[in-house]
Length: 96
Image 1 (cartoon, rainbow, N blue to C red):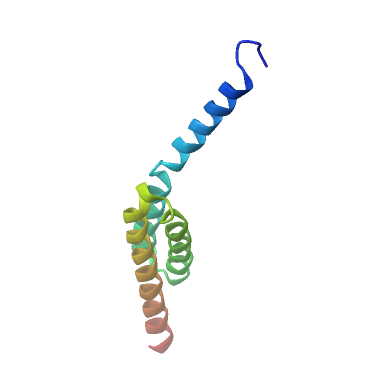
Image 2 (cartoon, rainbow, N blue to C red):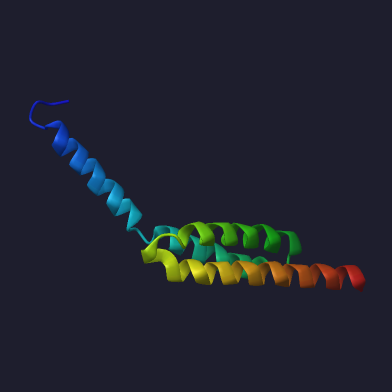
């Protein structure tokens, strides 16, 4: 640690960096991307389930951050839809 920076300055800089990470919309964008991908691969049943569950988890965790809340809600809906489409396709293959 250099003598130029006091402990208070270092703590303030770390707090600002932590606040900047909390304000980032990146988790919402990632969840939305996984949700779209889940919906695209959902006709392949197991992939639809896996990506859909991942989109649900990422969406729920990203919804707690205000800048990413809207994208996170969309990701949750897309993940749920991907799981439903995956179940539909697996049942249609199994039944006939």
